[in-house]
Each structure stands twice: as structure tokens, then as C-alpha cells.
Length: 114
Length: 115
Image (cartoon, rainbow over all chains, first blue to last red; front, side):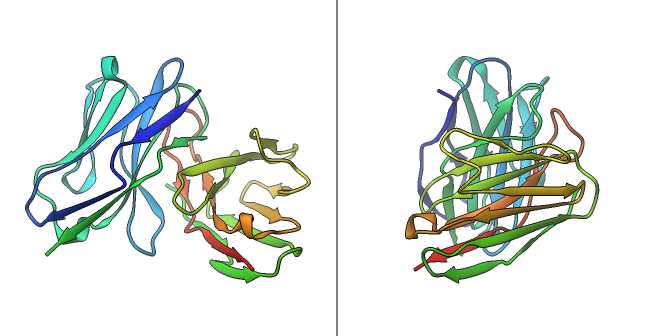
């Protein structure tokens, strides 16, 4: 079955701490991978995406993610978080060549203490 | 990119009634998607709405419960019919502007509470 697992439900960090959010997927075939962020009261926004090429992907606001095919993983990282990174983060996958429909993980709520 | 407006942003409804959610996009798009996010759960795709054809529903979702309209390339509606408390969720509209292998854009969602 196609699925996405996010290991952490809620992560609490102090400012300047490093962040790594885990994401593993189960999907037959070649995949596209995404991280979306939802700030309080706002739309889901794309942080970064992987379609092909360099498995280390850099996104907005200093976030990056690494696609490790052998581990079916796409973990999100940021070396130093800020209070403004407080949000919910969603990992998502779809099949290469598909048209927009995504399979999402349950999301990880990140709280950054000032 | 695409800007998506959803109405209403939230509503509280009586069980047994129906609610229609509107999704307006600022550009023409081929495919629009409706998702549901139940409390504590991930986003789940309800259906894909193509202009000029019947919506395609995912397993576990049926047209009688979630009828969808797609009258043109910038607009769609999702109706939640004969609501029960189990339908309390956030419903989101999404579009894929350029087609294959691109990102999806989301509306702000409609927070529905059924009492």
C-alpha cells in the first residue's frame, strides 16, 4: 500500500537548535517527494521538492532534504531553527508522471521556543 | 503559481444537513483536487475533478456523499451531504497548475464542525 510515515508527531526545540524531521514512504515505482509547511492560520506552502537529479534538495528559508532511495526516506533538515519556523510540516509523495494528487504523512508539529 | 480561494473558511452545521464548499483559482487549471484532513490525521484525497467530466473518487469516498461540480477551468465545488459528526474535518482544495511533475497549490481550507 502507498503510504508516508512521519516519525515525530510533535517536536519542541529552542531557537538555534538543529532540526531533522523524519519521513519514510512506501510507493511502487519512481516517486516525486515534497515537504509542505503550514504556518498557523495559513495555506499549505511548498518548502521543497525532489523530482530527479541531486538527492540533496535545498528549499526556502534554509531548509533542505535528502532523498535516500535505499532507505525510502526524505528527511527534512535545518541547521538552526528560528521561532518563526513554528508550524506543521507535511511530507508527501506521488508517482513520477502523476498529476498533482499526493499522499501525505500525518504531519509533524514543530514548536520553537524563543 | 496559483492563488486559491475557498469559501467558507469555517462553518458549524447541524447533522443531516449539507454544506457546499467553493474553490476559486486565479488561473485556468486542468485538474483540481479535494482533500480531507480529519483531526490528528494526514490529508486524504477525496476526488479529482476534471472540467467537463465526472469526478474520479478515491476508495472510500462516493459521489452521493461528496458530489463535486467543475463547471469551468477556474472553479469547483464540493458538497458534504447528510452530514454527521464524523464529517468534522478540514476540507482543502488543491490544483496542479502545470500538469505532471510539478508542485500542488492549496487553498486555506474549510474547517467544518458537525454538531
